[in-house]
Length: 370
Image 1 (cartoon, rainbow, N blue to C red):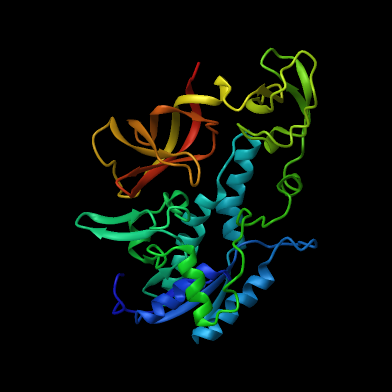
Image 2: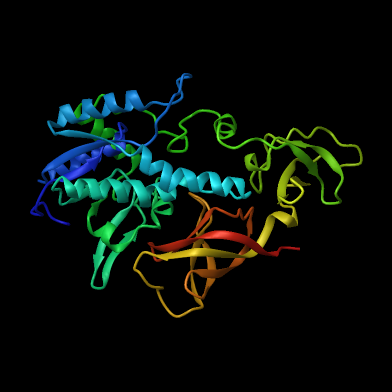
């Protein structure tokens, strides 16, 4: 779906933000038949003003009016609960730190939305993601955006060939500054709207308060590496490896005056383990084990083990590593330099020469850097 001659319109996922608005603008300028879709993915009873769904819909409609395009509306809240949120809760309950945006992209934005658009007769969909889709002789490729600070391929590594073949990402060659300038020139009322910083379904509310609605808090001890009590946590689900803020640990007698960091969780005892110092050896690991391995091309990029680069969190500089595939969907990854705070449940995403190859879910760190 690389030319305006494709049969059927392209339906842009119009979120109410400036990125998707400019994506629609660019496609219309290129000659595509453009329609838009506003997706409601969460049934919210928010009374504190953290959720902006109503305002987002108003902004999306205003953009559609400026562009003179049809705006469809659809509710995927049920699909989101079943395919994303239930997994999110299960992972937190198991003491891991999931990344719901990764699953939301595969299951909702490039799953339910794509399927619904095709049912409406669309040739495909478009989004305001900062990434580039290209076609090679042996299939479709996902490449990093020109603006490295905005690149979103980390959140898109679960996409497959059939999804890329029906998708467009017009912002891949632009910077955020370019996007805001184009939006202002087009007369979009949301041209200066700030970017959302919350998890997709939570918005800007306090995460701890939100999570407690669905998972009962179970307070327990915070212990140092010698097993000594240093405080009480509010529930293991609220903490992740490397966390510093919100521990509530005051000054400790016989302890150095360095900040405390989470270095482990013991679910069997409901205990949180902490240590002092950002670069404590318990926070540095030279390798990790991961599963649910996914390749965008549908296959590994070469015989294992092979060298590539990995990214353990969004915007992290790429890290040189050696990847070895174990069985069908497991792998071990060894890094040239020790990695800080390798968190189970998070994604590791693989790259080579600007291309996003795929990724996996971190199961456990290996090789403490001592």
